[in-house]
Image (cartoon, rainbow over all chains, first blue to last red; front, side, top):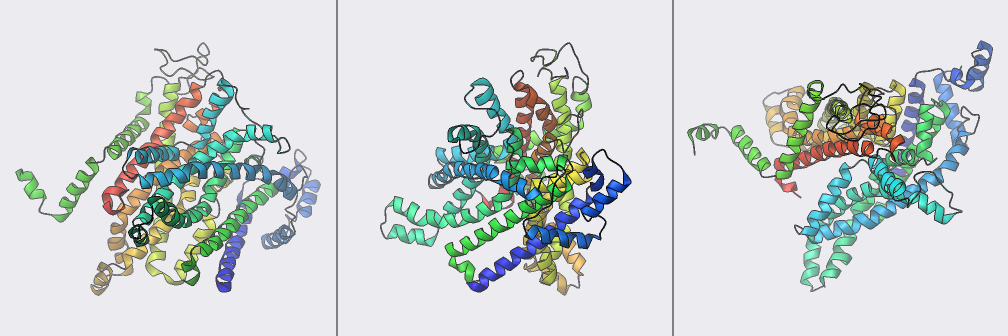
Length: 312
Length: 292
């Protein structure tokens, strides 16, 4: 077990280091001089030189990289164009985005898992067709468009919910009112993926030998489905959650833009649009780190659920 | 059985083609998908002749006009004909969908083939790098690349292609690994075939059905991706029509003219759905075992 953990953590670290290099190199490849961007209208060469010196832009790239990583490891991601600390900005935005992500995961699990189980158990019946067709539509409807439709229906026409904005969790009711549309918009697409995966792994579980044995023992159909087939299908779902994280992050970016929520996703787009080097660097690094860490956790969780993985 | 059939049935390849066509025609959803895909391609190719108006022609006497016999789908906030913009928008979508997939394939297939065929350290290096690239969500990668290259349809297409490549590398690597174990590989080696011959003349053709299915499923992702990038202002630039920019324009008029936000979205859904259904159908006919 120790060796397995060590190998997984080591691989994650390697991925993270290469990712940080790519982020660093990628940001350097963006056209435009960061010193000019930082100096705003002021093109005074002396000032630009001073800025370059302050941000180490006059040093060789490897030196800049090591310096950046060193500071990043100490929680310092530099300051953005408005002289605000990037790490602080990111830390204040992340809870908002996490709330959307968690709520949409809840929505997708509530819809996707039961739908997948029902579709598999009632294979070839109307329920199955309904669920699979629903999933196909869910996969093909881009969530940013669904978001616009929701705003038209629930905010503009019916006046049930606010069209955009964010209210902190200290006002729970207003918070949920603002979050419910983004969560459903993002959650339904993910529910479609979850449903398809749940259906196919339930189908293979239901065809497995241990299910036949369970039936032969005379167990009730409910017990066969939930205690045996369902529990084994959950293992695949765990992996899927890790793999879908990237899609979830992408989805959050767009959803936050549509609903005017100043979260981490919106910050990413703003950083790119404003060509704010330090901010882009920090945001993308945090995204990659988050992705690697979650996948590492999923790998470890997976090995607990399925001991065969640890051995091989 | 007619005389023509007897002749064609003699070669195994022709027999397989007939079998595949039969299987395909038995799937009404896949056939419908193909019809819509062909329709969209025709519309995209012949947009200048099909569109009733120029997509940029403004009519300030008919701003946000409702659908009428003159403007079937009404007009937008500059009095431009919505139908004409939708037809021209198909061009941007199809271009992004097809070319992004081509870019992704050109990058991914050779890399995947080399990794899967040679295995060893080169495979390990490629697999690790793919992991790294997969650590950047598809859209974040595309957003970043659009930021580096500057916003335009071409750059968005490149970004989407590069963004889709890592997943395709995985698929083609896995397929190459499997094909390498087939009996025809040692047979070709015994015949004195070089590595290049084995990879390109033997393994690649055997992967073609998998790659075709993957391509059909990558196109809709790229179409939606183009719409998202254009919507965020990182793809097609106004006034050039694209379904994404049309949605972006519509955002300011959700209460006055909700139809402007509904119509381009329906077009995106129809295109994505058609390609997805076609891809699922192709997968089923090439490999009936995976039939859901």
